[in-house]
Image (cartoon, rainbow, N blue to C red):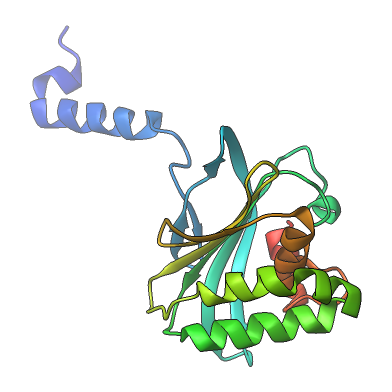
Length: 194
């Protein structure tokens, strides 16, 4: 007896295609608010998984960016900010923002979160980091990436703009989003650490 699919070549082809689609990895990418992100990134020689992600809104109405946090799976969410481990915050912008706005908002938030001694220790590195910001357009991506051996890098669409040494710098800058007391947004922080 001839199987039904053998009598219908179109049906056979459809079954083969369906089988191939079902055998693909379940998550070639991760979608956050309709934006695709990789399920893991390489930081130095280490593959780091995505921990969480969400949408940041300004004044509830304006969708500013979709973002994700990559951090080692064996580090508790509450420990990621302080841990001397590779981590990356990737932000996909949903509107245009000027370099000057990045400088002002970053400086304001760090000054709000850090004490005078920390600000003095970071001053020169913050100035160098802030000078690297560029105007961005909708669809651009900034990534803040830390590796214990290389320091903190700022990348725009995958291109390194600046690199700054020190775990203290990484803790202060990642603290803009991950600070447990006064993050930019508590709900966005919780989404990143999920």
